[in-house]
Length: 414
Image 1 (cartoon, rainbow, N blue to C red):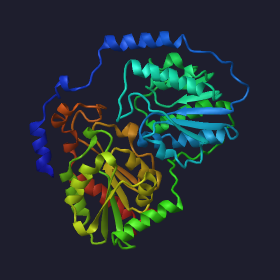
Image 2 (cartoon, one colour):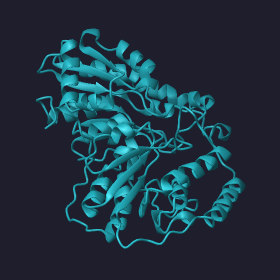
Image 3 (tube, one colour):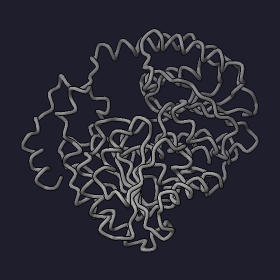
Image 4 (cartoon, one colour):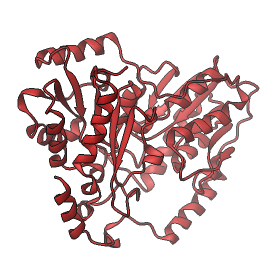
């Protein structure tokens, strides 16, 4: 898929995308929900704050990529509250991102409504779950909670109804009634920066240490490194090969590029005989990954499926570059120090771009006028008429990857 395919996409583009295919909420429904949440907040229990912050609860409901973006904030909290117990509450779908994080003491999971892709729950069931989860947390004795997602009212309400005396978050209309301390939400702010800003404000009551590192953190073990090495040996990958990983899938179909695009990029990079290609996939991405791998040189491509996140991280740490759409694995690559090229269409690199040195991480964005719209939960009927990612030319992706390879000719991250 080259410039001809891009031109074809432009000719076929419906301008604008029919509004009936976009997920929208009526103004009346939005205001009704906000009014109901204000009334609900009046019922929150009150607990007198203690003199010391002994236990801290951090809430982030998202999936792997967004959870990796909270790791700089966790490091800041750890250095500010050295003697406090820090618990992080995440979905079971992202627990692996923090499984070995040294800045937390406890990792707990909750199947947050609205984020559980396997069993979506909305409406009355979300409130029923809120009551039971708040009752469970109520006896833990947390004195401080951070609701790190700006629009996640359920998390703010959970901390409030668990009786936590200090609840920090962002002043979005749905969350504000449940907060004791609110910071202004900023639309054009990177998520890692927002997490750090909230953690820094909350840390004002702790012992803030200067010069806290703000890079992403993901820890692999010797066993993970050994497993990665074994996979490469079994595939007869030479020890001095230039490893290039492609992760074609993501958590939203609208963010995925075409298999043909990856074929063009992978085959162009494989013109260098030293290159070996890894195609990685999570459980829900196997079909796309298999299609991508099938169009790449068979004798120099390894399809990596059903591996633990930590083993995938160990593989990425050996790569000269990792490529893919905006997704958790691309943030994972950044966290382990691998150079990356990330593709953006509906999602916004200003808010979700690679949190790492600009000279080691490149972004390639769609040229469609309505890019970065944020409509990620499009219904299936809308996807054929949403050619956002088709406006990315393979030549641009290949050029970005080659630029990073030229900076690192040895073929391994420095």
